[in-house]
Amino acid sequence: MKPNLFTYATSELSQDAIICWIIDWINYDDCEMKKFALDFIKKILELHTTEFDEQKVDKVNLAKQYKNIDILINLYFSSGKILPIIIEDKTNTSMHSKQLETYLGNIVDENKDKYKYCNPIGVYYKTGYIYDYEIEKTKNTNYKIFSRKMMLNLMSKYSDNIDNDIFLDYYKHIEKLAFNEEKLSNIIQKDNISQRNELLKTYEGQWMFMKLIFNNIKGSLSHGSSKGRPWTHFNFLQEYNFKELPDKMFYRLDCRKEGYYLSLKQYLYLDESKCTDYFNELNKSDILEYKKKRLERLRRCFEITLEVLESKEGKSLVKGKVSNRGNNESEIGVFFINDKNTFHKFIRCIPKFHKFFLYEIEREFNILYERG
Image 1 (cartoon, one colour):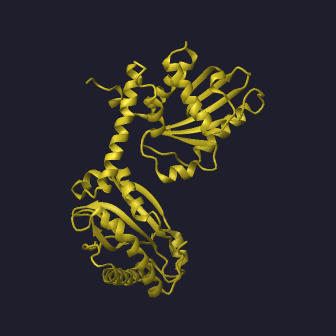
Image 2 (tube, one colour):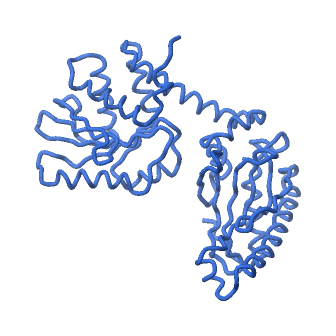
Image 3 (cartoon, helix red, strand yellow):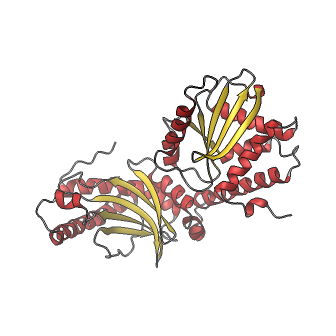
């Protein structure tokens, strides 16, 4: 064993450098690294179903952080055509706002009067966990996702023939990332509740678990952090959808003194002008009082739902003690993740609980929820 360079070179700038280093081998004499680099380009061209042949690339030109683009590659073909490739490179972060479209637009504008230049294509390359919203954001853009798995499959073809420390260190590094992600997934699949902290202290572990619970339920997942600790939401009711129930509602996976939990939340941002406008002449204290009354009714719905679930399904999830903290965000009910409430039990019971809970709030508040 020897130290791995990428144990210490963990930043996205370091990964930018390794991608540039790989592609730059195309400019050098024939060797296994050049074959690997051309194969990498081939996979990118195949993702975009272009008619370009990577074997007809005469040279490449590379630029880092050009107009804020992580990596800009210009492929020069023997035909005289030039194909720009934009690589947005991520390790554990995600893209923001409209950056992908902006980068493509900048290169299109720059080359619009240069007849040799083709329209650019984009690659979203990420070695960390790829979240569903990242996949969604690349749709309807000229970007294709190049995942860690795709890179591993590509590098494995050359790992026996390339004796290069940088190549092998990077290969082992992303191989370890894949192993760690699979390890997290196995904790859920094997219902290993004793390792819940190892799973749920990570952003990707929480997301995997929540995705399995809510996979077939109308709503959306989101995540963030509080004091460096991850949390994950499943949002199913937006605020101001119903006059009788104007609150936002969601499930929250988080941690507190008693451990990791999944709670059902009621939320209304009382200081927002939209809130005061919605309730016309009511002052903040009156709005809060009405919210608390709705909370009492929602908690009754929660209790009735548990009773219905147990009568229909037998043993259900064991509820925990609710927190009464907070004015904007209030806890309707909570389930702690423990030996009584295992991963598999959550995955089996929560979809049924949610279905019955929606029926209860429809009855209680005289609303019709659109299930999709």
